Structure formats: C-alpha cells, structure tokens
Length: 190
Image 1 (cartoon, rainbow, N blue to C red):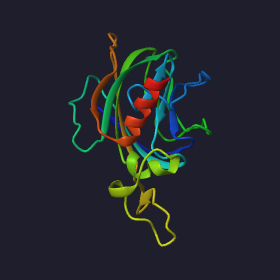
Image 2 (image 1 turned 90 degrees about the vertical axis):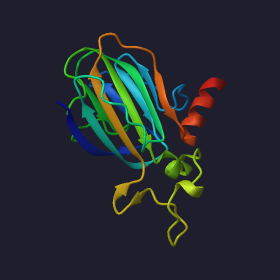
Image 3 (image 1 turned 120 degrees about the horizontal axis):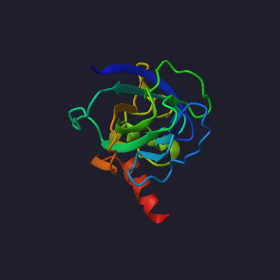
Image 4 (image 1 turned 180 degrees about the vertical axis):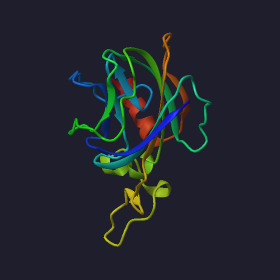
C-alpha cells in the first residue's frame, strides 16, 4: 500500500536535498546528466527551476515500481539511491529541520527514486535558466512574474520511492523542459 505525503519546500539556490539525516554530505546540483538530480551514497541534490521560494512536493512511498505516468509532467527520471542510515529525509537547503514528511526510507539499503517535475520553466527565469514566455502566467501589475497561483506553487515535484536491492542506471523517461535541457547540456560541458 502506498503512503502519500505533501509539503511545500522552501528552495534556495535552485535546490533541495534528500539526505541521510546527520550525514553532512555535500552534492552540487547545477550540472546533472539527467536534468533533475545528482546522487551520491546517502545524499541527493534535486535541482529546481525556481532559485528561491516555495515549490510543491508530493511524496509516494510504495512497495514496488509504480505505473509510469508521464502525461502531466515535463521531465521524469528514475535513479538509484543508497541509504546508508535508513533515516533518509527531505531537507530544505538552509534549514535542515523537520518539514512534515516522514523518512523516505525505513532501513539502510538500495532504493529507486522516480522524480516527476513540472513548472520549472515557468519559474526558471528566477535563476536565469528558464524563459517565462508561453510557459508562465503573465506578470503582475508590478511586472513581477509569479511563482504561485492562489497560494499554490507553480513548480511541482512528485517523488516516488521503493526498495530495490538490484538498483540500476538512471532512466530518463521524459525530458521536455528547458531547465532540464540546460542542466544536461552544462553537465556535458564539464
């Protein structure tokens, strides 16, 4: 049975973290071969389109690989994550405190994480990567491009997690947003 959680994370410097609590591991997101996430044992750094502000994150903890649904998402990738402690959590980059989501993993071991993202292009202008154009709502009366509509963040992520002893390579199921293309291109350059 799937367990589902939703939170709004405050991202800074275009990132948030998935990390074994207390590990202190550093991972840098800006150039990622899959366009969404860099992973090392015990930590993952997830890149966002928004430089600073709130994004909506849904988490599904499942027992086996869920049915793949790419329809409403602009990028979907799947990676292997090695939890060293089994106490792996979502963290805001500058505030390593609780955020309302329980640990993503229940025990040490190998997991698969499937990331779905949308709205990164609409808010990516904030980090100098995206272009609002047709991807965003119009600016407000002050000429400011919005990052939320009626209190709901435009940038949204779905994270699905399941135990997978065999692991596997990164799988890029869908890669259509400009932010992801920029991150992948920059990774090739470095």
